[in-house]
Image 1 (cartoon, one colour):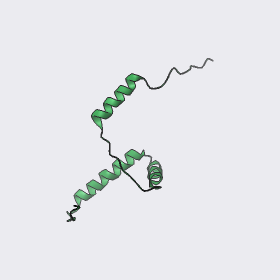
Image 2 (cartoon, one colour):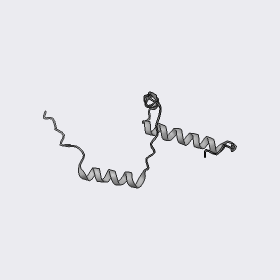
Image 3 (cartoon, one colour):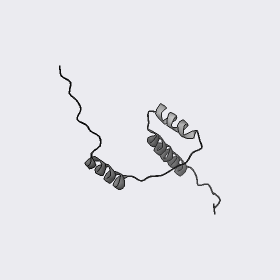
Image 4 (spheres, one colour):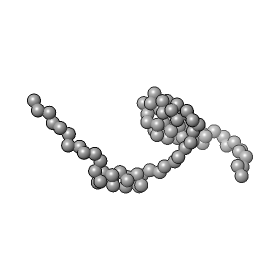
Length: 80
């Protein structure tokens, strides 16, 4: 039996361009900062739930926003 060797040589320029176009047109970035050590905790929790870190953070934000919108409005002091 002969084995087939992969001809994959890495990401092509066309693939890079397509990925960049998709990211530019379809998603936005939000940068968050956490205390030292919390990043690993978030990553471990996400993995334990079978999610990527990004999917977990997006889910957490979405669920919190939904919960906040269902509760009665609370007056919050101005932050100026």
